[in-house]
Image (cartoon, rainbow, N blue to C red; front, side):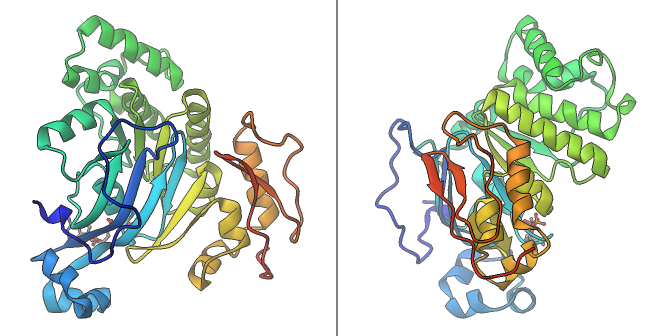
Length: 345
Ligand SMILES: Nc1ncnc2c1ncn2[C@@H]1O[C@H](COP(=O)(O)OP(=O)(O)O)[C@@H](O)[C@H]1O
Ligand SMILES: [Mg+2]
C-alpha cells in the first residue's frame, strides 16, 4: 500500500470508496481529507500533531517539510466550473496536481467518476491523463518547432490517433478557439493570448472529461486576460466540460466559478458560490479577500458572464443587501445564504 492510501487520522465522512460505474449525479471528482507534505519522511509529519501544528517556517526549519495541502475536502459536480483561489504559495498548484497524481498525495481519498484514483496503477493513470484529463498551464507549454495544427494535435498523436483524424479534429478545435487561419503558424509568430488559445485548443482536442487550468492567464495583459476569460466561459457554455480552474485573482474567480474554494496556507478557508463568499464570508480572512467586491456586482457579473441555464429564473439577479437571492444550483434553484450584517460594498 502506498503512502497515499494511508489514513490521515481523519475518518472519512462516507464509508469505503467505490470503484463501480459512475452514477448520474455522482461527483466527477471527490476529494476527502487530502494532505500533501513535501520534504523528508512526510508520513512522520502527519503522525505527529505537534509537527502538524507548527507554522510553515518552523516546520521547514525543524524538519525541512512543507504541508502544502492540509486536510482538504471538496467535490466537483459534472459540468461545474470549480475554482481554486488563494495567494501565491497557498497550495493551489499542489492541490490540482494531486487531483491527477502528477503530485502524489501523502494521505486522503480521491475519486474520479467514482473510481479510486489513489490505488490506480501507473499504466491506468497514464490512460486517464491521455483520455480523460487535460491541463492548461500558465506558460503555454507549446512545442516551438511545431506548427499550431501539430501542437493542437499532439495529445491525439500520443494517443495513437491516425494522422488524418488527428488533423481533422485539430482543425476543428483551432476553429473553435478562434484561431482559424493560423493552423500553419509557429508559436513564436503568435501573441501571448493566441498562444494560450493554442493551449486551450490542445487541451480540448481530446475531448477530456475534466479540464484543469493552473493560472493560465496570469502572464497576459488585463484586456487579453478578460478576453480569454470570456472565451473559457463561452467554451464552457458550448461544451459543458467540467473544469477545475486555479487563479489568484478574485475577479477571475468570480467571473468563471460556479463555486470557489479559497485556500489559505494549504487549508480550505471556504467553499461556496461567489454570492456566498461575498455575502457570508466564513472568517476574517475571506472577508478581507472579498471586502472590495460590492455584492450586487457579483450577481451582475455572474449574470453577464453566463446566459441562464434552463432551470434558472429569467428575471435577473435581485439586488440589494438584505434580500434573499435565488442562485442557480445544479440541483435546481435554491435560496442563497441570506446576506449577513457585514458591510461588504
Ligand atoms: N516540489 C516541491 N517541493 C517542496 N516544496 C514545494 C514543492 N512544490 C511546492 N512546494 C511548496 O508548497 C507550498 C505550496 O506551493 P504551490 O502549490 O505551488 O502554491 P500556489 O500554487 O498556491 O502558489 C509552497 O510553500 C511551496 O514552496
Ligand atoms: Mg501555483
